[in-house]
Length: 336
Figure 1 (cartoon, one colour):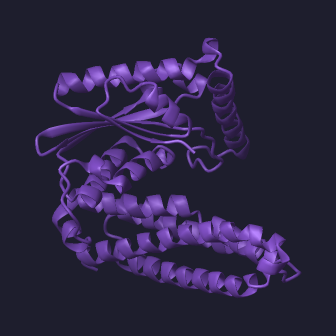
Figure 2 (figure 1 turned 90 degrees about the vertical axis):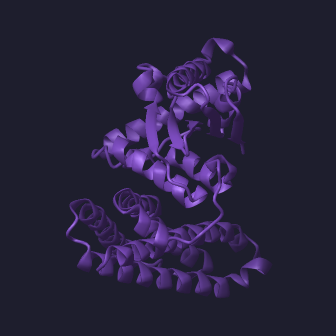
């Protein structure tokens, strides 16, 4: 299979995972309808449509993945990503067999089963793997990715794209799937996809590397220095309330649970103590956010004093972003 065909197939596979994510969101939205007798009468037909959509997406996913596996084995990096996608697909099928349909075909049970099936697809990790493969191909064959992707408006500043800002914030919650080189490739890929320009360089800063005590307090943030047409941009992204059981770097279930509880506790303790109650004696995360911001600003301005600095944050990250914005040109703060 030619590289352009592989790229096209990967774009189609990424669209399938995106549609699965939207379908999971729709399924969750329908759950409250099952508790209203009048509304639930129409839910059976809606279940049929949701289940049909899932089966169609599942079939497309398997077909596209098999096409890629059959022809893209020469490159070890691509092969490793595709094999991981295949392993996730096999695991999702095994999970369905291990967790059979509910005995009673009530509307809520069918909806619950659909949600379980979609969750077993590991949509986040699958999406990341697919886009990592595309980012890698963009690194080694940018012209072919450009020729295959959908054309869009050329933006002088990637920050003008809301989709770019949202993807950069989402990357904060997916960093467990990346190494440093993959992050650099991925940020360049995001700049191209959303701004349709080629980033010349990417430098990555991680607060938990820069500040040794950041992990103990639960604080997490990253920054990316990007050069584009001789203009540099810096994006400082503050992570919000976190905690995940799906970290592939941690093999032990007990360790994953311990990590999830510890991270969630640290963030919610800070939310309540410092943000809600206003206890300034326990504002370690805010102080670390300001220290990290100062560190990044000093570093990037040594490289280019004219770099444009932006802040990104959601939830707790939005508060930290807003309170550390002294040196920033613009903010993207999403606070629910």
